[in-house]
Amino acid sequence: MRKLTIKRTKSFIGCAAKMKIYIEDSSASELTINNVPCRKIGEVKNGEEKTFEIGEQAAKVYVIADTMSKEYCNDFYVLPEGQDDVYLTGKNRFSLASGNAFRFDNNNNEEALANRKRGTKKGVVVLVVAIAIGAVVGFLLTSFLLRF
Image 1 (cartoon, helix red, strand yellow):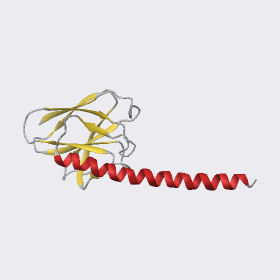
Image 2 (spheres, helix red, strand yellow):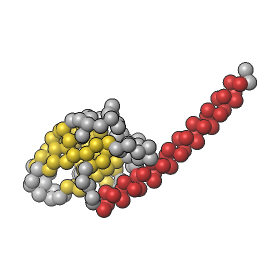
Image 3 (cartoon, one colour):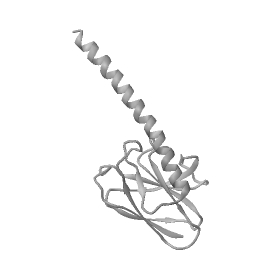
Image 4 (cartoon, helix red, strand yellow):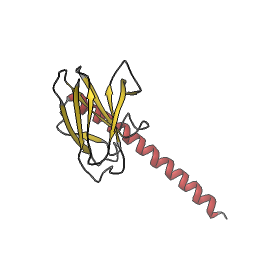
């Protein structure tokens, strides 16, 4: 067993939310993120650092805000196989399109960068739909209320 330490750098963006930490695990899957079976290993608050026990196999570590936005508001870090402890840092970054997602620092993995881009595209669709629904509901409510 080795230790995975994640430090969530203090930031005003997403400060009230706890970020949920998941690790790739096909044998004890609790949640699927981007078609990868994962199990929850913990949560991290704003400005907090936590250590988790993980196996020695290669795996992806995901950080999500909640299960509803897990497909577009996430980031992952690919852990190499080995016995060495791993220390990761990151923070929530401002982006309406990606839901102010947590981003690992120095994560230049091509697959992770492509995931961020894909997530931003999905987030834009969600944002546009939410704005359209809000506008229609607002219009209907004001039209109905103006009649009385």
